[in-house]
Length: 230
Ligand SMILES: *Cc1c(COP(=O)(O)O)cnc(C)c1O
Image 1 (cartoon, rainbow, N blue to C red):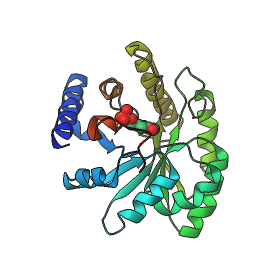
Image 2: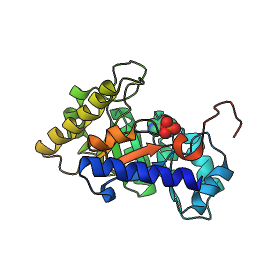
Image 3: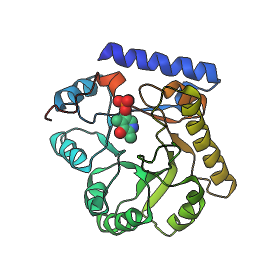
């Protein structure tokens, strides 16, 4: 895993160099979903302390399993409204806020927990209808509505690109997210700064388009086996 982490770091450095951006602008979020606790231990031994999970149940299990260590668990997947309590308790950040109903449930639960949660708004930039996220044209209204939720701290936008080998199409998704971020800032949503986009196979393209947070699973942990019991 050490050599895989090293090659990810090199890829980040090269992509930043090519884009004329400082490496410090790009934060790596290791995505531990589907990998074993032992593999997460290995990553912790390499100094990693934040991990992304895409199911609330898994986030909660990780939290419980690694309770004695100072780690952060980031929710990156679609969350059902009835899971707001677990998110409010166990997530350090939510990168997949995609609807008002979830914001409302989180507001109620976070108030009870007396916590403020940094959130990314997930926007659908892909041309498939399988992906979650707000439609781009709904973003401004959603940001306005979020202003009344004092426990949610919007920090940026998140997207998943179209699943394709077509680099131009992937890049279009990332460029669209950047444009939306810029529009939001111009419209007075100054705290919307971060762009969570790019995964193992495409994060160089995302960095070229301004990614500040890349979500990397298989390039770090190895191939994912969805059938493996955890
Ligand atoms: C699984 C997942 C990733 C990481 O994917 P890899 O291709 O393994 O790097 C990133 N983001 C989300 C939302 C995911 O569900």
